[in-house]
Image 1 (spheres, rainbow, N blue to C red):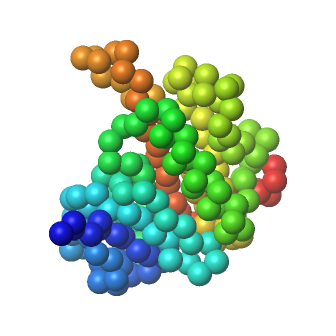
Image 2: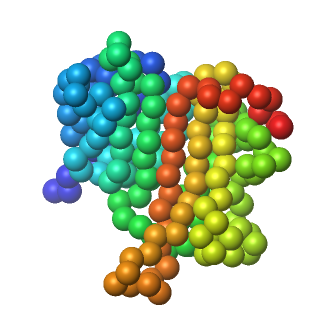
Image 3: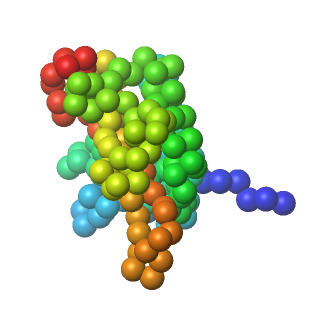
Length: 180
């Protein structure tokens, strides 16, 4: 029998201990020493449970939460993958996430400088050149997401083309018009 994948389910602002209870994951107990690095110890799907703006990611090996002094979750950082991936697989994840944002009513933020990451030859060339394109999305005045993709090369395999996606979810940081 195949073991179910772990899941971290939350809405920003919820008490961290409530997030632990409603999630099926390896998130540690909250202490004064670890509030800035509450991370899973095995891969987990992340699900934003907001009824309007919710979305879900593929399993993430790196998924970390930050809790403020009151013990409420205010930031989520993750790489929605369990390993670095080839460009085709990375683009599929990026496209899926952005489509979930669009369907949920999220809008591109500062789109003149941080356009959505589209699967075009020009974008692929920029990614291969390690330019790390970044896009930002906003859900009304509730949430903001920063999403980027970076080259990931190692000295022992310099020609192995692999990529790492990073997603940061937080409360609005930028107050400008989402259509700027």
